[in-house]
Amino acid sequence: EDKVVQSPLSLVVHEGDTVTLNCSYEVTNFRSLLWYKQEKKAPTFLFMLTSSGIEKKSGRLSSILDKKELFSILNITATQTGDSAVYLCAVANNFNKFYFGSGTKLNVKP
Amino acid sequence: ETGVTQSPTHLIKTRGQQVTLRCSSQSGHNTVSWYQQALGQGPQFIFQYYREEENGRGNFPPRFSGLQFPNYSSELNVNALELDDSALYLCASRHMGGGPSDNEQFFGPGTRLTVL
Image 1 (spheres, rainbow over the protein chains, first blue to last red):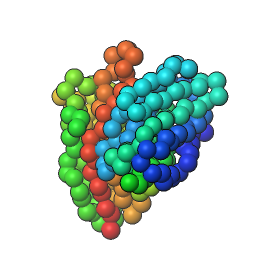
Image 2: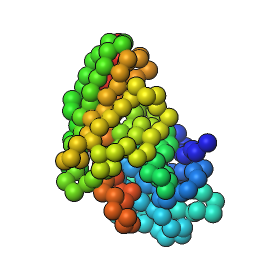
Image 3: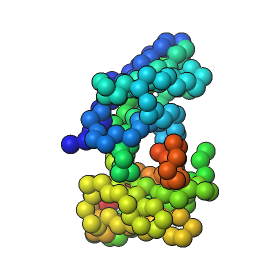
Image 4: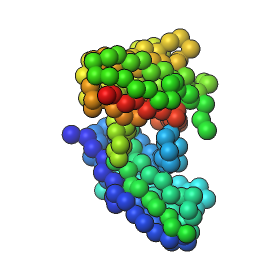
């Protein structure tokens, strides 16, 4: 059965800390892996990764994919209270199906 | 904010009733996917519509059905509502054209459905 597993389920850090969120997957016919940030309702798109070893960066956020070991990490450096959210990992297969993990709830305290 | 809109924002129904949720896709997008997100869980894929045809479906029963219109907007219909159908229903749109950005989908704000 295709699945995406995220860890940890929740995380509490203080402003300025660096965090690493994990996403492992078992999805046949893998096409791409996507990270989203969900604060209240609509998940907002962060990154899409299709190739191993190529880091994607956007400000303090970065992500990398390992297609051999079937995982991805999302790093957030110098965390701010505005980073508090649920971070979702999703994997798309070649048949247009998206599989989401349960998310990691990040709480950044001042 | 994305250009994806959904209506209504909130909805309360009773068990056994039917509901229709609506989604307007972002301009230029030809594909709409629907998801069910229970509290504390990630979104679960219901189905996807591309050019007015369903072209992908998750593990949801047939009482979950949908439509896509020529302007690429979409409806999700749920018949014979059950208590477990209470959830946030998200739609997401993207443009599928065989290019590298095919999987970049953008979500609407969701419809919160409560079944009593």
